[in-house]
Length: 260
Ligand SMILES: C[S@@+](CC[C@H](N)C(=O)[O-])C[C@H]1O[C@@H](n2cnc3c(N)ncnc32)[C@H](O)[C@@H]1O
Image 1 (tube, protein in one colour):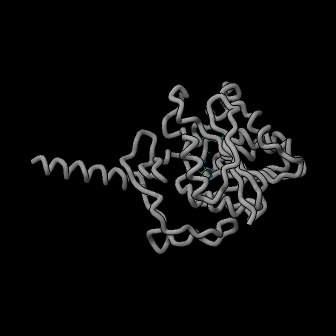
Image 2 (image 1 turned 180 degrees about the horizontal axis):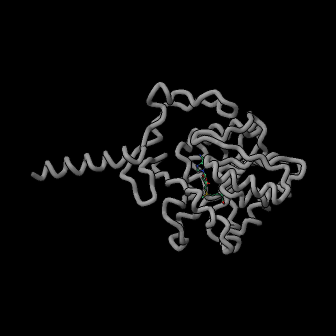
Image 3 (image 1 turned 180 degrees about the vertical axis):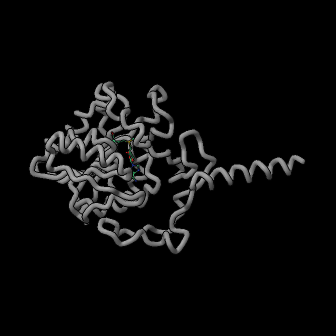
């Protein structure tokens, strides 16, 4: 009877994981290539970096390098991104300052959401471009509305896919990912394609809530340790330049695409 119970529990977990859409990339002919669209040129290796686990609350049940990937924040929660207390908790000005933006920089805000950062960066690059990349068309619609309101002619909204930011190869000087990377369903493919989009020496500014600090009041899967983030970026061929300890609750980690 106990064996039957255990078997039942095993199949219940397996079913929950399958129901959560946990899948390993690179295991079928269809997944062997990521496609050949613009900015989508990189083919992922078949690898064992992805796995499955019993989904935790807010989680997908899919793991990458041992970390469970969180569910994507839906566009219905967009107001939360614009909450007034965010400026005090996240100090966006310090992130922009750390980016040392030049007037002609090409910047990519990956997982841009409502454009909370996009529209803080746009005035700093008057002769450059800010690509605002997101997978949710509703978020991009909000960005388009704000572009009109702010007359932000240097913002370019881009509908990415779960695997690629769909950016032109070798053009991006600086990419930022704020509170977004932990949601990427295919972080490896996203980062390999983003690396292609960066020019040699181009930088990635990765901001995630500090998982090492239990007092940071954010759900567990929406936080990352610095160690884990560095491992994942290195796996995509990016060099860890430094981590700046300037934000009250988040790591601000800087990575670079090495020159060939
Ligand atoms: C928590 S929101 C953060 C938005 C914004 N970075 C901010 O700080 O206000 C995460 C955003 O990442 C987007 N996202 C999730 N996976 C993505 C992917 N693979 N490519 C691009 N955007 C993605 C979601 O649609 C969502 O808008």
